[in-house]
Image 1 (cartoon, rainbow over the protein chains, first blue to last red):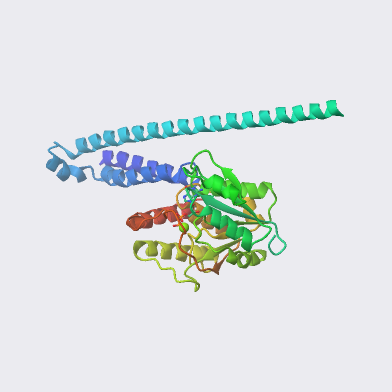
Image 2: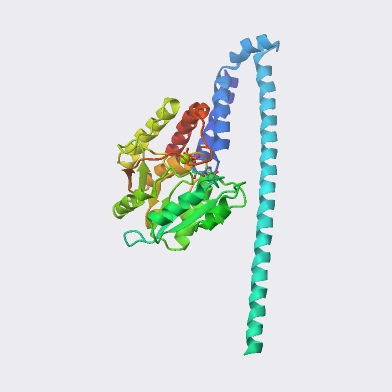
Length: 126
Length: 233
Ligand SMILES: Nc1nc2c(ncn2[C@@H]2O[C@H](COP(=O)(O)OP(=O)(O)O)[C@@H](O)[C@H]2O)c(=O)[nH]1
Ligand SMILES: [Mg+2]
């Protein structure tokens, strides 16, 4: 009973945190949905830990609780992989931005040099 | 100039080289004196070059930001260059620029005017989950805005200076954010929203970004986006 209280409360606190972060626009929709979806699985499980016993039996896992632990670890791994993928994409984007910036600067400087040249010509002629 | 106002047409475009030139030319022909800004969102084809040749100003994003990202750039441009009105038109030729003066007329009394299907003009039909999603969005958003809005995901919109100022600062880049979330946000903050019935045409070239198979997912995501927009501040 005590354990159920602890796990259930933890789940609710997490839920409240995520909803509040979403509300304040600190979390992008796609991540928010991911965590919300997870909590809708986790909270019932924290209240009724034996919920997955049947499935565990089917898969040959001794108890529902170890199945949840296993799935939890797989999920966290997937999240880590996803985050590294996102970071790679971000790195590629900043790289493109830096190139864009350098190209722009080169163009602006070429432009400035050309204008200076022309002005010098005008001075010499005049 | 339309009705004495300085007007910028913003066209978000992704791989629309097949239609963008005609769209730009038609706008410049129907609405003499307006400026056209094409936001090329990292197209792999010649969209930017073709649009520039047709007489549009082109802002090229270095990589794809989505319609929302492209539109904020457009509104910032409108804000920085002191336009009175910004009109958003799709690059695929579905929106008829002859409706623009009608939309702009209403901007004296409203901040955001939507060119809407399903309001009497034209014979555009949608079926299945996509239709349910649109019905749900239309019901909730009409209630929020205090006006009948039949086509909340329409990309045909006109914004006055007040609205431009807000969109230049805040414009979501998330899925459906450019349509649904902007409406919720604006209605909540007291901006006045209205619609004008329009007939839409078929896209001239290229492919639409939605397929029938995605309709069900669309319904789910529309629900999620709407719920999120409603609980957000
Ligand atoms: N900037 C930008 N424009 C896009 C993107 N995807 C689609 N568009 C443009 O948005 C407009 C509407 O796209 P379309 O596929 O016709 O959507 P639909 O009319 O709602 O079916 C067109 O002008 C497209 O070129 C994108 O990722 N970035
Ligand atoms: Mg279209």
